[in-house]
Length: 125
Image 1: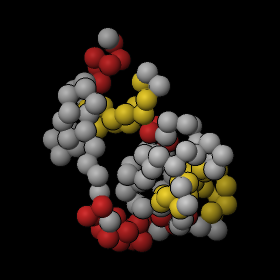
Image 2: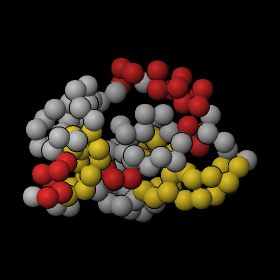
Image 3: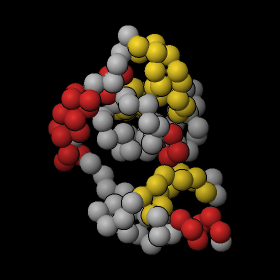
Image 4: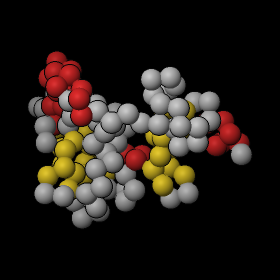
């Protein structure tokens, strides 16, 4: 085991909405009994794309002992989940990620996705 960054999910804060599952392309996070869980720590790369979409703040990144990230297993899991993948869209212009880079953001108390074209207007008004 190595000391590395990994996602932590506070079960008390988790409302089971599942918004964190889709950004986790590696498939480390799944809903179990109505709560998000990191089921396989080898699949969590610690990038934290799931954090910003959580409406309750249940997710955080912590530094701790965990199995090393398994890039090959994560790629296999992502391939296996291809049909389950939910495409995200920019909340402002509705462009999908096949045409633009999308970034997770929080605004007005909501966890959303914004494209890089709409981001400047969101930042500068």
